[in-house]
Each structure stands twice: as C-alpha cells, then as structure tokens.
Length: 508
Ligand SMILES: O=P(O)(O)OC[C@H]1O[C@H](O)[C@H](O)[C@@H](O)[C@@H]1O
Image 1 (cartoon, helix red, strand yellow):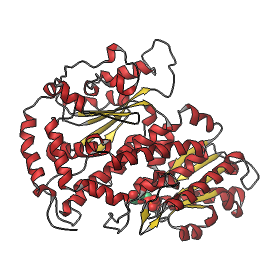
Image 2 (cartoon, helix red, strand yellow):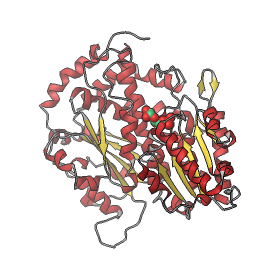
Image 3 (cartoon, protein in one colour):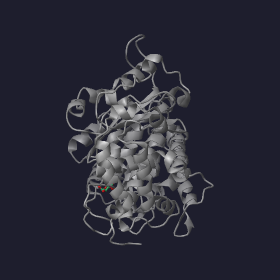
Image 4 (spheres, helix red, strand yellow):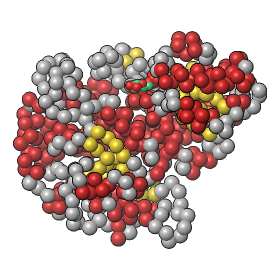
C-alpha cells in the first residue's frame, strides 16, 4: 500500500489550501451570527456535547475536511484498525487497545485469533486479586492487610492511571470504595520521588505494583529495585512474593526480577504503551484502590466511545471531527499549539496524559515512508484546569498569539457547594465561570435540550464575540467514572485519527 505520494498532493488538500485565504477574511463574530451554521456544529453522543461552532470553519470548510478524510481513506483505515490489521507498520503490529474494554462476547482478532477472551482472563484475574487484597484475604508477610499501593511506572505506564485516579478521587461513589486506602505513583528517578512516595507508608501494609510494558525501562527498574530493597530490608527476602506484583508484556523479565509470574498481570504487544490505561496498567492499580466494579464503569465509557468512533458517520463522529479540526488548525491555519482547559479540578491530570497520547503519536517530520513532510503535523498540547489557567497563561491566549482551546465544561460537579451563595463549586456557578470565558461561549440554543439540564438564562451565551480565536468545547452532564472513560478515550482516539490522516494517509 506504500507509495511516495503525499497527502498534500491530493485535490482536497489543495482545495483546503486555497480555502484558507477565504477563512482568513472571515471574522469569527460573523461566523457566530450564522444561526444555522452554529446549530450544525453541535454534536451529542451519550451525554457528551461537542460544540465546535467557535472553530474557524464554515460549513463548507467541514465538507472539504470530509473530502480530505475520504482522500485519505480514513473510514477504511479505521476499519483496518478495528479488524486487527497490522497498521503499526514500524513494529508490524496490530493496534487494538479497543479490545481492552470490549464486552466479553465481542470478537476482535489479531492474526486470526480472537483476543477478547485473553483480555477477560486478565480482567477476571485482576478482579479476583483486587478483591482478595481489599477484603484482607491476601495479606502481607506479617499477616497485615495491604491497604496502600505504590504503582511504579513511567510514560504510558503512569500518566493514564494517574489521570484516572485523580479524576476518581473526588467521585463520591469511588471515594467511598477507596476509604482507608491510598494509591501513589512513583515515576521519577529523582530520589525525592521515592522519598515522597514512601513517606508515611509501612512496608508491612504496602503492595508495590511494578508497571512496565517492556520491563526494561531504566527509570522504572531502578525504582523497582529501590522499593524491593525497602521491602526486603524491613521484612526479609521472602516478603517480595506477598508485597510485589507486576504488570507487563514481558513475563520472563518479570520472573528474572524476582516476581512470581503467578503475581504478574499480562498485556500484549498490540497495546501501545501510551494507550495502555485500559489494560492491567491502569485496571490493576485502580481496582486495588476503588474496586473492580468502579473500574468496569470506566471501561464501559471507553467502549461506548469506541463504538461511536467506529460506526458513526463522520458528520456526527466526535473523535473524527476533533481530529479533522486539528488537521485544519495545525496544517492549514498554522496554529502549532492546542490548550486543553477542563473546568474541573478532577481533570487536573488530563493534559499531561494527552500530551503523551498526542505528541508521542503525531508531529512527525516525515511520512510513514520516511519522506520529509512539506507541512506541519501534530499539535503542541498543553493545559491546566481552566480556572487556574485564567490566572496564569490566558493572557498570552487573549492578547498574544492564536491558540485553539479545548474548553471542557461539566454541568454537574462531583462535589456540592460548600458555601451557599458563593461563586464556587456550585453547578450553576461553575457553568457561569466556564461560559464567562469569551471563547467558551458556545452558541447555546439547543444546549438545554441536548443536556436535559435547565441552564439559567444568564448563562445562555450572548452572540457577540470579541476575539479571533477558534475554540471548541466539550460538555459533560456529570463527571462520573463512565464519563471519565469517555473523555479520555475521545481524545485518545485522536492519534489514531491523526495517524491515519497524517501518517498512513501519506502512503497514497
Ligand atoms: O511501559 P514501559 O515499557 O516501561 O515504557 C514506558 C514508556 O517508555 C518510553 O518512553 C516510550 O516512548 C513510552 O511510550 C512508554 O510509555
């Protein structure tokens, strides 16, 4: 399928190039005054509303982007991914993180073999093990319940699980399940990180989970040896069997390290490290902390958006729309960065996770065949919870360069208001704060209907707009484990889209 033709040589690409000049003449204020346009730019799926009316696009721009997707054979490439073809051509592997959250009866094949039963064998093992640890039937070397977990890992073996853990911590149901337990993450080889992570912990009541796809990553292995020594020094060499378990694709190295393979939780080389949060990488530590049923909800949310991505027409397909808009912003309008701005502290670690998911996948300077790309591909992602960012770097966004922003609003906060009448933590006020951002103001006529929520009048966005920045917003009705699964996987599907558009596409 490889060829030396680049996507920029196709007609739809050239057409979009020419279209840039027209868009540059158009002010976003005028785009926002077009009611039909704004209505057409809201897409809702399963409690998530994508409003991209503040992107610098007209309806015909979006049509042209769909033509580009067609020229890129995007649909066929999504199908190839879902059917387990080896679309990871550099490593000659399938890309099947979608199988990690598929229901038991789904059939997803890699090399002709249905991988879903293997996934569920590991999920069942995690469920059983986490229940035994949480109930106290699996105890430490001195007979004490293991109530604290330190997960050692870096990159994809750290950022996704940390993000989800941070988001679940304040979810009332998850918090109730986690009572009396602690989950910590050790990534850095700076001895400060070890010191921070073991401070206040007793080896007798601590379980260490070593998470590494390869089990060779230098930082992780150094930290694993350090905590092995911490356990052995306190409890003797035989304690490792009770206090250390592993998550890896490389079980022989787990054994060599001194962890019993019976206490190892496998995953597979068809899971890219950066997409591994739904494998044992995330499911084991999160199940130990919150219990498997909560984590199952997270997996269900992810699976829901997988189905949406696979089967929905591009006009209503949230990951595809976000992917195409990114291509437009980066490769055509020349905006190199994207700010990720959740108006929820629970999503505090979302941007660092997406930084890896997106930037480790995209932004390559050459095509999949090694041909230098004559255009920029891939965004520079950064972000913070929006309210904090407002008092930090928004100045540059407001008054400096153009930075497309992903505003993420939550209609119903995980937590109730603490001070009645104060402009904090309250559903309406959070929304007010969110909508007070000029670019977060989305054309909201059907929002009430879409979200099934009563939005107070003063929050219904006004139509004037005094900026020239594109933006989009994602709104969730409430931030639950299920929604967290959806949000993270909406965005983590993007690289698949990007890869197709930016990398695989260039094979044509
Ligand atoms: O899980 P590991 O094998 O320890 O790898 C951890 C990380 O290592 C490298 O930095 C890779 O580029 C990342 O994608 C990966 O997540």
